[in-house]
Image 1 (cartoon, rainbow over the protein chains, first blue to last red):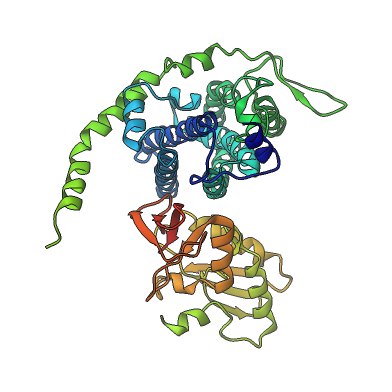
Image 2 (tube, each protein chain N blue to C red):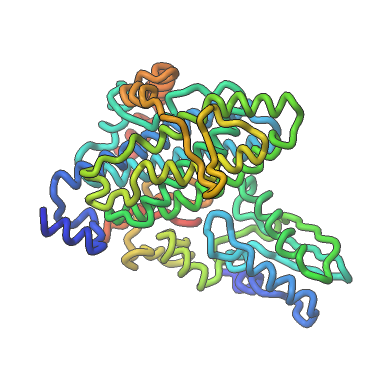
Amino acid sequence: MAEFEAFLDAGGIVEPVDDMPDEYRDQVFRFIELHANSELMGGLTERDWIPKAPGLRRKMAVLAKTQDEIGHAHLLYMVAADLAVKSRTEMLEDLFANRGRFHNVFHYQAVTWADQVAIAYLVDAGALISQQAVFKNCSYGPYKRILRRIVAEEGFHMRHGEEMLLVFAEGSTIQRELFQAALDRWWWPTLHMFGPPSRPDDALLRWHIKSERNEDLRDKFVQKYATLLTGYGFVPPDPELRRDPETGRWTTGEIDWAPLKATLENLGPDSARRVGDAARHWADTRWVREALEAVAERPAA
Amino acid sequence: MNPRSVLHNRPRTVGLDGQNEVWAALRGVDDPEYPGVSIVDLGLVEDVRVEGGRVDVDLVPTFSGCPALAMIAADVRAAIGVLDTVDDIEVRFVHSPVWTPERIAPSAREAIAEHFTVAVTTIGRPTPCPRCGAAALVEESMFGPVRCRSIHRCRSCGERIEVIR
């Protein structure tokens, strides 16, 4: 293990064919599985908004985002399965049987279209900050290379988010109120998304699967988005959010971690419905998978 | 492969200063999904016409219904809008000719392979893996994260590869 860690510290990249300690394999696997599950759950949620998106352009954007996320999930499940810890089917069955984990933000309900805007503007930005940090220094080769593309595509989602936010920021009083209400719902979950403060012995950091501590990534997000949101005249729902007049740096109030813990146990406000819907889709589409398998097994005519 | 499609990547009527300036500006417009790769090198620019202060740009979408079209058009307008001599810009998406992967310039193919590990379909011979170069890609899914790419697996190095088709 010491030798392996020295290899990682020297910037070594691990490929699936290489020998690696089981603990490393397990950590990388769990990290990618969580990412894959989150892309899938995010894509299913996004899909619900295709018929409700206002206007053809927005529908195209939501449609593309859905495809993007399902496609990312697809790729990530393949890369995770290559680690030979669990098969793709096992990962999916765990997820639908409520034994899988996915990011906290997908355990909440998006109430109005403004929530979708808040998700595109805040959650996607937060995800991008995290993924960029992982991409920069990730020791697992296949994941690093896929992240390069995911980061480019997330950047493209973020531009949609910014464009949609401007419509609300420059819109009517009702539109501004709708976005403020959405911000009240999504601000804290977005801060939670980065995770609790990293422990000094965090294996993900030690093995260069992640390269920055959770609290540093969260701080990056707060510095940028507290400035932008208040600049547009919106108020993050944190009475203790302050900007130091000398350094210009923002500090938040104390973060309540109880809601994050609940989502980690799939006990968030919308967890049961989300997992239930996903499981139902999985069951409803069984015949498609069976038909595809039957075609694949049929001898060529 | 249609040799004309390669020519579309270059200005077809050179000689007008204004036109060269517009092409130079377009070379600075990156595709939103491949930062660092210009829309000119991807073969998205079909034609540029300059008449006085009026510029017409014809773009060919990779796929109809590509979600990035409005963004690309906005980036094109912004890039040309800063030129002194320009006061009117019209960006159109034309549906003929149809975009094919052959329109991608060799330099852009290399950049996409190197930076994004994405391959570009080559007609008439097997598509090499952008990572190990082996002609050993097997299609695993017709659909990837975007409609213009499918997912493959390289039998030689094991990498999951997306291919622009």
